[in-house]
Structures are given as structure tokens and as C-alpha cells.
Image (cartoon, rainbow, N blue to C red):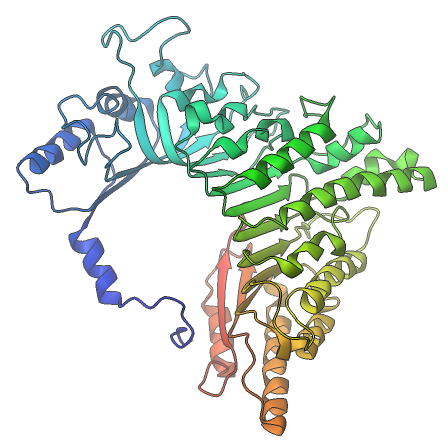
Length: 505
């Protein structure tokens, strides 16, 4: 398959990249404080040639203890120097710690290294180590409800935080401290993969002045049911929201805080639960006209909140996922005149292994088509009326089912002449690959034919990207199919690429 060279936004010679990593970046897998001291000696002698030192390891207390206790106060290292991990000024060390254990009672826990409530480190007296990291991968535990779960952020200052938990028990973290600017204002990226945040946790997210990337799951299903006065709850992990009394007020405050943030550029919001049948199972005894009206009204409140966020003049990348039957086409109406947003991602996740309750695959496909078609007709296209009111260049969406696939590409063909989109990415399962590829090829052929007849200039779309989701095998099979079609030749309208990516959220 040909590499996209003609339409690359940034072109960097491969030798430049190789030279950078060979001569200017030092990669160390098991950084210790002793190694840091050796590098510090090189710095003192003027022989430290590296511009970046990258290191990562999987957390164990014994390996981390020395680095934290000594490195956190820069003992024996030039203060504010390039290797001073107790300072965030000129630090060139990018330290990534994975599978960091949060559990308080484990002997391996980082908490065992921290001072107790009223104690200080006896060996350091008034000094309390603070270590600046690049990335910390936090692993949740059965103790997530402890209000001091994120007290570690007083001592570890990461630029990037990833939180996930694999526990199946009914546990839920209080993320308030993670969004507290007094202890975590250095953070630049927060990605919560599993569990979920509550709106009250984000009341002051706008005060995190360095935060540019935020990915948060919310429990929309339970928030909806709470407003309907329904107590029976069937989503996985049970009835977990702790702050139930003022959910809608908390939601409004969260939306306003996100809107007033001057730093967030990349925002992803997704529904924690992607099993749509669970919410209907919870309200099965309320399934009447009164419920339907009330349900629509509550969902509209959440939809309008997302709509407000899509009017933001700050966000450049907006991703929304798992919002089936909560958002609708009106949610996206503010995008028509959004001058800031560059990329929009709209995805739905339906696990094909589970039976769909209270809905059908055809209904889901129709729901997705209505939103995608609305975006094609009203946001990405000017309909021949002149310049578009927005600057969105990249659109990514998912398709779980083949229904309405042809209708989507018919809509693309109908409006292709009025697009300013640069690329379209379609996330699919491997079973849909050839169908999607055929539609892209047919679209290319139809556009080429019209352009030759009418002597039109080339349309704006330059790239189609196909992502094979949840496919961990060899991608060469799909690449060979693409190569056999010879679609990326000089006469092709689009550069087509195929890749695989495991879904993590």
C-alpha cells in the first residue's frame, strides 16, 4: 500500500527522526536514582548531550521507592537542573509509571511510602518528596471509595494521568482531588478509561490551567433514571452514583466549567454503559406515554448540555461516544458556525456478542444514519450557498451494522462538491471491511466520472481511513485486499488506508 505522501499535513524526512532518537534521546527502561546521579555528573561536566531522557517501567514498590524518596528532593542533583525531577522547570526526564497500585492496604502500595495523617518522613524531617512525572497509569482497586484515593497527587506530579480499573465489584472512585487545581494544576492530560466521573467532580475543572486533553465517562443511564424517580437499576456494577440529590444542577455547573476553560482543546465525553437494554430493563414497568414524555425531556437536558459544548470557541477536537437515544441531530446544530473545531468524532459501541433488548440492529443503524446524514448535509456541506461557517476538516464515525451503509455514501456523493472535509475515518468490525471498501471505491469512480463530464475541480476529501476495530490479528490481510484493488494509484481520488486499533474506551 502506498504511503500518503501527496496529502500529508506534515512531512518529516525519516532520517531526521532516526537521527533524533539515535543521538538526542536516551531511552532507559529501569531508571534508578543511581543512574540519575551518573547522568547528573555528565550534566555538571557539560557532557550531557541528550535533549530528552525517556524511561518507563511497571510499578513495584521496591523499584520505585528509591527513585521517589531520593529523586523527589533532588538529593545530590543540581537544583533546577535538567535532571531535577523535584522541579517542573527544565526537567528533560520523561518518566512513565504503569500499573500504579492505588489500593491502600496492599503491601506493594505507594501509600506505604507516604507520611501518615499527622506524620512526616522522619529521615527527611520537614522535606516531603515531590516527584514530577510524564505519565502515570493508575490502576483502580477495591478501595476506590476511600476519599483519600488520590492523595498521591500531592507527591507525584504527572503531566498525563490514565485511570483504569479491572475490578468487577461495585466500586467507584471519587475523582474530586484529581480535578483539584491546588494539588494537580500541573496536569496536562487526564484520561479516565473505566469507572466514571460524576458531574460534581468537574465543578472546577476550568481551574486546571494546563489541562489540554480530557476524556471522561459519565453514567448517563443512571442520571436519567434518577431524574425519573426510578430506583431499580440494572447497569453493570450496580447503583454507584454517590451524589444523587442535585445531579442536574451539578451537570449544569460541569457544562459551564468546561465552557469557561481556556486550556482544554481536546475533549471526549462518553457514556459509561454501552448496553442500551439495561436502561429499558430498569423502566420496564414504567413504559407508558407518561414515562416516554418524561424520558424525552430528561434526555433533552443532557443533549442540550452537549450542544452547548459544541458551541465552544476553545475545543479543537471533540469526541462523543455511546450516546444512543440520548443525543439527536439537534445536538450538533451548533457546529454549523463553529470556527474553532478541527475534528469531530461520533461513535456508538454495541457489543455484537450480546443480544439487543428493546431495540433492533436496524433501529440502531437508522439512529446512526440520521445523525451522520445530518452532519453531511448541514455541517460539512454548504449546499452550494458559499463558504462554510465552520472549519471542521476531519470526521470520524463508527458503524456496527451494514444497514444504511449505501445511504451514507449516497449522501456523501450528493454533497461532495460542497465539502471542506480533508479526511473521513470509519471504524468498523472486520466483517464490514469489504463492504465499506467497495463503497469508497464506488464513490471515487462516481465522482471521477462526473468531474470528467463537467470538467470540475477535485473535491476536498483527500483521505478515507478504515479502522478495523477489536481486531488483534495481522492487518496484512486487509492491506493485501486494498493493494489488489490498486486504488491508491495516481488516478485515485482518495488516499485509502487501513489499520487496526483495539478499542480501550
